[in-house]
Structures are given as structure tokens and as C-alpha cells.
Length: 147
Image 1 (tube, rainbow, N blue to C red):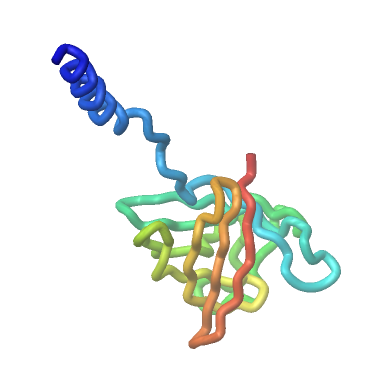
Image 2 (cartoon, rainbow, N blue to C red):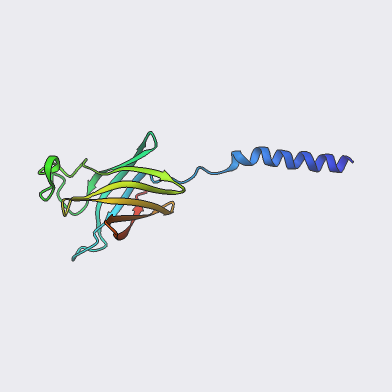
């Protein structure tokens, strides 16, 4: 009887404390390296984007220009973004986390001056799949976390 009691108590303690031992679920918040996807610089770092969260909504802004001068402005941007500095520009807006994915957002391509629907999936703690779509045509790229 004493062995059964000890076993039951050990099982209860294991269940109670197992919640405390779980690691924090990885998040997309942090600084990510965004690569060049076309041309002679393909694969090199294009920007660094800092993703932050406020009230369950994720945003991303450019925090480092890797192949452009620090004072570069957005020449192809339209409306309020035209001729504004790229550094600090909000290029990722309104992502929401649902079932382990980040969905419903928009990403602004400063090279084309266009906005696309955007979803993100954290492949690993240091690899992020970014999918941009226009209508039913989608294209995915991978960003890596800056350490």
C-alpha cells in the first residue's frame, strides 16, 4: 500500500510541475536577416527587420540596410512612403498568431513599391518562412534570426 501511495504522489507531483518545466514557445519577435532574392546579390543580406508584438499583433520595421547606404530613401514607394527613409520604415503589419502560424498580415516590398498579403511560419527558432501573395499567386522566402 505504501508503494502505491508513493507512486501516486510521484505521478501527481510530476503532473503539477511539468507545466513549469516547459520552455517558452518560440516567437517571431526579434531581429531577422532578410535576403536579396533576385539579381547579382542574390542570397546576400538585404535588410535586417525587427519584428515586435503589441496586443497580439505583429509588426516589422527595417533596422539595418546591408547593401544600401544608411540614408537610402524609398524611390519606388507610393503615397506617404515615397522618398521616405528606408531605415525605420514599417514594412510588415497586422500579423496575428493562429494555430502556430502568423497570418492575415501585409508586407511592403520597397523595391517594387507594392504591398502583398503575408503569412509567416516559424520553421525553427532561427528560420522563418515568409510567404507573400497577390491573388492566388504566392512566393516564399526564408529569413534567418540575427544572433
